[in-house]
Length: 213
Ligand code: HEC
Ligand code: HEC
Ligand code: HEC
Ligand code: HEC
Image 1 (cartoon, protein in one colour):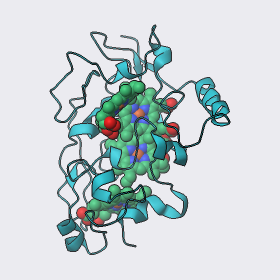
Image 2: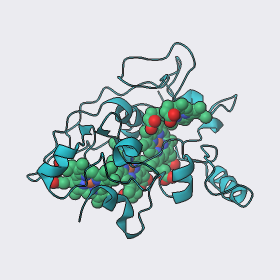
Image 3: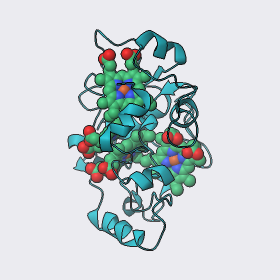
Image 4: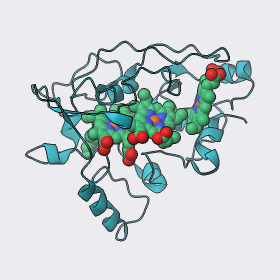
């Protein structure tokens, strides 16, 4: 099988920027984002790369009507002498992200097609394991915050997005890739307009929402 590297076509990003003049900055917009893979589909569908209304793959826990081939990699996960959380293999939504972002499964691998475009370079964050990446797939609880001493308690701390860290950023209490990123470039991420982040990096606001430093 031929392996080709996928880069989001710049003309789509440019057309998204042009349309910003016409729509409010906070409008959700997967169209024209890095996750607009429609140029790879003859019918120019957006959602099909990741979701299907029928016959979804239920092998990954908590996967929303999942349609993309999933990675079965085992990763060396983040660890350090000061880490209090118990970090396991990526589960749920994070495993779905890694199903393109570890570079082992093609971005257009859905339905019965194995696909042929693979992520490489800095976009393939999981291709060298997860030891050098912010920990994910662990429970971030108020008691973890007490144990650590320099984390905000998630059940009562504002996420800056309208509710608490727990409500807005965690998945059943778990920290995942989607705690920092919005795969759909929803209203919060569209407002930040950088790496699909939901909270700006300016002044390290993103980090300081959870870390009391
Ligand atoms: C690149 C992959 C990808 C594409 C494309 C994508 N999604 Fe998703 N979607 C995900 C992942 C991963 C999750 C679960 C994690 C999360 O919610 O952050 C999700 C969650 C969802 C959910 C449940 C949670 C929520 O946000 O409401 C809905 C509904 C959804 N997607 C609809 C859509 C629709 C409709 C489209 C097309 C317009 C679409 N998605 C395109 C990856 C994708
Ligand atoms: C179907 C494949 C696929 C899935 C699933 C997927 N991505 Fe992506 N992602 C891509 C592609 C393709 C790009 C564009 C890479 C490029 O242009 O180099 C991208 C780019 C990104 C970027 C960089 C965006 C930018 O504007 O620079 C981030 C952040 C990202 N993805 C996060 C996620 C997260 C988090 C998830 C899971 C919730 C996820 N992705 C799931 C294919 C995918
Ligand atoms: C603690 C917050 C946080 C978590 C958790 C997180 N990211 Fe990111 N990610 C960031 C920030 C901030 C950036 C932009 C700065 C950078 O590129 O280092 C980024 C950048 C990226 C990029 C763009 C890299 C590039 O240079 O093209 C991708 C792709 C990405 N993240 C995917 C993921 C995936 C997949 C996961 C889960 C395995 C994940 N992220 C978990 C904060 C996070
Ligand atoms: C949604 C909440 C959240 C966000 C946002 C977040 N973190 Fe974290 N981070 C955590 C939690 C929880 C831990 C686990 C801490 C522990 O168990 O010791 C952690 C762990 C870490 C660690 C490892 C600590 C250790 O002892 O090894 C570092 C370093 C770190 N984060 C830096 C950052 C930076 C830098 C940013 C911004 C780019 C960021 N975090 C954003 C919640 C978050």
